[in-house]
Length: 173
Image (cartoon, rainbow, N blue to C red; front, side, top):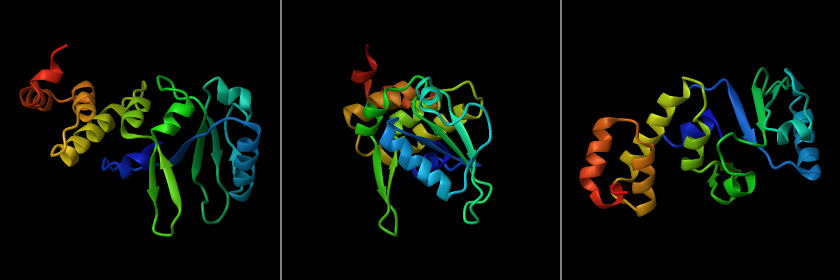
């Protein structure tokens, strides 16, 4: 749901970690704990890996020690500030099949953009790249949902002016 998803949507970003949003439940947390053990992941900051902290919106940070993932940081969250609950995010997710047949579940583009609206200065240029890349890749198929997304999320005056000229009706409140 972080930099890796940005790469998929065409807004490449160097990412030093992997971010994951999880549904908190006993079975899920047991599976995640088993995966963390396989990765030889150690919790590297407060808070500890506990459901209560995840449900309050805290991220839990791990450092992987397995030779194939050595040094990789993994940030686990259950709540994304300003975003819908996990169940709604899951309904709108994008599923990608890798070359080995592995399925990866990513936040939808609108949810990824919303999740990037943080107080981190580095996230705002990424939002701009995500929206402008989406616009460039899908402008030949301007659905009402896409037009609304572009108009709400676009950060560049030139793009906004073009959009309002192209789609004057959706731009009127």
